[in-house]
Image (cartoon, rainbow, N blue to C red; front, side, top):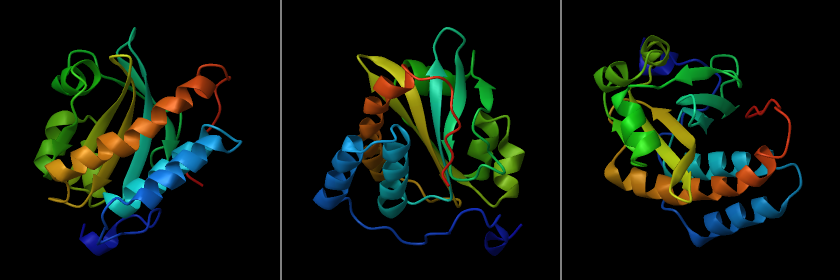
Length: 187
């Protein structure tokens, strides 16, 4: 599949810009709005798209007892619907992201294949690099923010921006832990 044949569910951004104070203001404002955690999910998605770049964006909650992640937000619900679960027990990815709280970055389709069971779907969509950001609170991973783009897209600088932008997702814990399961899609 060529880069221009990617599934039409998400726009393709070929350039990004620096993270600005205005982006942080928008994130802080989003936290004050009703309809949480959806408002902060949407704004983190928008800021990440402008400043890091992405084609596929998801947020996963983390169940430490089961070593399992579950999708709570997505910009491609037809391909990656909310509610989807992934077992991560015994994987190098889980050790790095969920336990050691370090971002994971794969810059090639082979790197994606080595780390993810659903690599064929991602690669089949023309995605060739991935950035997974652990969202931690009180020393424990509570979510992951996941960005996927064309091969070679992500750098160490994107990890730094992702950690900062993703930190706004910790506030969503307040609402998520007190509400019943709900479908969060990027639409």
